[in-house]
Length: 221
Length: 272
Image (spheres, rainbow over the protein chains, first blue to last red):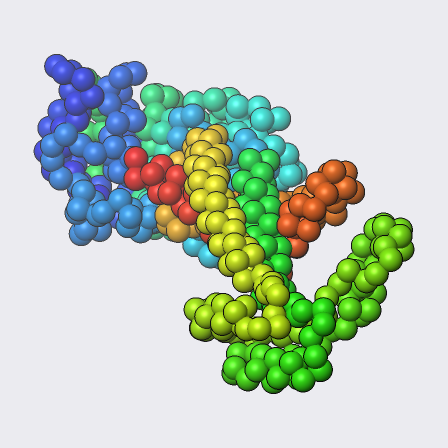
C-alpha cells in the first residue's frame, strides 16, 4: 500500500510542483497518473521512489515511513520497485543484456539465473535478438523497451513508469501497457504517468488527474 | 599512474641508497681493525709484550703481528699502480705493526678510545690508526639518507595519494550516471564502492610495481653510465636493490595509497 499524506513539493518559490496531495494506492492496483505537461506527474513518481524529498507531508509504503529511511538504507525501498524513466537512464557503455541484468546483480542473483531471467524478460519486450547490442545503437523505442525490461526483470512489488510509451508507436505502446497489465494481474502494483488519452481510456482502471500540482479528479475503484 | 610510479621510484632510490650506506657502515664496523705501528728497531721481547697487552681487553677479538715485508706486499697488492715507486726505494719504508680486530658489537666506544690513547703513549709504539670515526660518520650518513628518503618519499607518496584520489574522483564523475542508476535499482553503497576501491588498489599496485621495475633499471644502468666518473664515491653511491620485505612494503604502500585515495573520493561522492 502506498499512502501520501498532505504532500507538498516546491522547487522554486512561489510555485508548488505538488500541492497537498493525499493518495492511497492499494497493493495490486493499476493506476494512471495523467495531466498536462508540468502538472506534477514526474514529481509525484519521484517522491514515491524517494529520488526527491517532499517539502512537506508524509509518505508511507507498506507501513514504513519512507521519509524516515536513512540514505544508506534506501536500497531496501528501491529493491521493491521497478522504475521506468522518461529519459530511460540506461548505461550506454554496457550492452542491453548488462543493463537489464543490473537489478539482479545488485541482489546477488547467480549468473545462470541472471542469464535465464534476462533472456526471458527481453523476449517479453521483443528485444532478445538485440541482447548484445549497445543502447546507443538502438532506436528510442527500443531503448525504452530496455528500460522496461530492466524495471520488470526482478518481479518487483511496485512498478513506477514515467511516460513509458512516450517514444513508441501506438501498436507497441498498447503491447507494452498490456505487458504491464499482465504483470499487474500477478499482484504487482503499477503506477504509470502518461498523457496518452487513448491508452488511458483503454487500460485505465484507476486514473488520477493532476493539474498544477493538485489532484483535480479521480476515476476508478 | 606515471606520477604514482615516479613517487614510489624516488622513495625506492633513497631506500636503495640508504641500504648501501647501511651495509657499507656494517662492513666497516665488522672489519674495524686497529693498527699499532711499532718502532723499526723494536726488539722481539717488546713486540711480544705489546702483542700480549693489545690482546688483553675483552673487545679485542684477535691480534696479529705484521712484518714490514708483509705490509709492503699488502700495499703492492692494494695499489698496483704505485708498485714502481716502491721498487725504486732502497729500503722498506713500512714499519712493523700489530693489527688488532675489534669485536663487531662494541658497546663501549669510549673504553676503546681510552685503550688506544694509552697504547699510543707506550714506548715502542710510534702511531695508532683506527677507523672508528669513519664508521660513526657512515652510520650517521646512512641514517640521514634514510631520513631524507622517508621525508621526500613521504611527501611524494602523499602527493600520489591526492593524485589517485583525483583520478578516481574524475572516474566517479564520469560514471556518475551509472552510479545514479545503480542506486535507483537498489544497489547498496558497498556494491557501488567495491569496483572503485579495486580500481584504486590496482592503480597503486601497478604504479609501485612499475617503480620497482624502473628502480631495477636505474640500479643496473647507473654504474654503467655515471659510476666511473664518481671515483672514490662510487662505493658510497652504489645502490643496493631493496630486499623482498622492502619491495613488498613498497607494493603494500602503493596498494594502501590507491585504496585510501579512491575510498575518500567515492565516499565524498556518495555523501553528496
